[in-house]
Image (cartoon, rainbow, N blue to C red; front, side, top):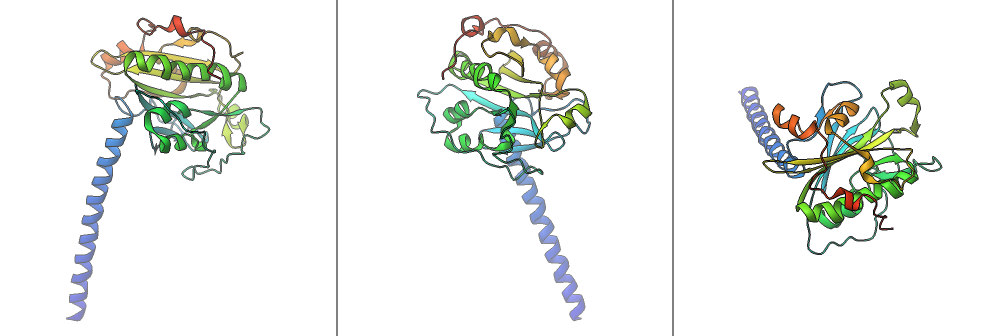
Length: 283
């Protein structure tokens, strides 16, 4: 009798535990989906073809998402939204932090004496003025860093980031941005060309989209070996080219016809790119 009563109690408790787990998982999934939808447009980037080099997991941060690769020990993309604000202000730069969600120990001093800067994917200033101080701190996680040559990081890339937040966001009011590294196709070369554990990219991309019923896009690819003073419009490419070089599908919810219209061509009309292409950096 005692044994049957005990078994019934255990089964009842197990059933309650499963019910709580199911409800909790459902609530977590809905919350996670809501956050992803808020920080992305037409779905987070995914792989066009699943390989060990394209496989990644989505890490959620305050103000932005990243697609982290444990093989390349690098983020493959960062996705965030920017909107116009009346009085843009950013606090002092926080310190760099290790991201404990990565499987590998990439620390703030991992790039020391390498000749590479700790280059932000989700940018410090733009994220700070739009999403706040906590989000700014999250941009200093090492999972948001990639090895960038100083002339790229401190000049050309920084100029592009400034034009995006200072000129394009006020012009359109709202932008979806996806940015990340472009790696060499040679797997063995990638295994050798590393800063510590982190694979070194050969270039970087940035995709800007004005969402809407008739979205418009502008995309760039900038190689590591720039001088830094080149005009921005020299590096304009199609989204299709970036997808071919990265193996990623940046807007998986777009219909084939809408994707063709947005991603296949290159058009700078309406962006005012010519006016800002040679602007000096803020610093």
